[in-house]
Image (tube, rainbow, N blue to C red):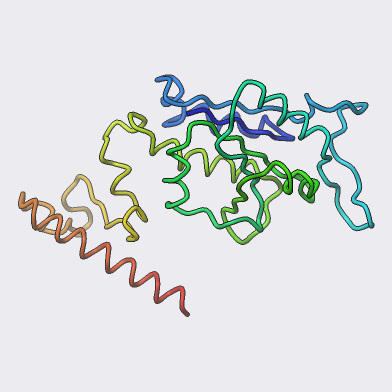
Length: 224
């Protein structure tokens, strides 16, 4: 898979992709991640990529020309399955969306900044708009990192344990069950006996019961 990201502040993305799972995925050649500086595609003086919005109002807007230049330049080498814009008013990102995107070959993610991007980019280039939550961040970089991580860990070979991603929370509509490791007892707090029983059928039954319980408790909490 190839994921290109357009950002006004690409240096914010460096640490996200230089460690842990995403680093190993790139080293294995399973995913190609590249962050592109929008300023590299502007024709305006001093690297300008934003301007005041027509009609007045507070806040600057990312200009149409630099972003379109970037998109069309990248499209010369890559055919994108989706051009994604990270925005608070997009569709809420969930595991189902991550699963769907993990089946794609090439993704382009646009990170908003300031008051967002010129609407004409959304109208004519963007194919999918995604939000990671109903709140506003300083830019779309954090959201792009979340989406990239959630998608890439689903790719075959990225995780050491091939079954690990299959049992993550939300894969089957349920939250993951509690997990424990050594020591078996700490300050009088004990690991559930069933997990030490060696009875794998009973263990899986217990895990499913705990997943259902956690999911139901969360649903009740959300209703309050």
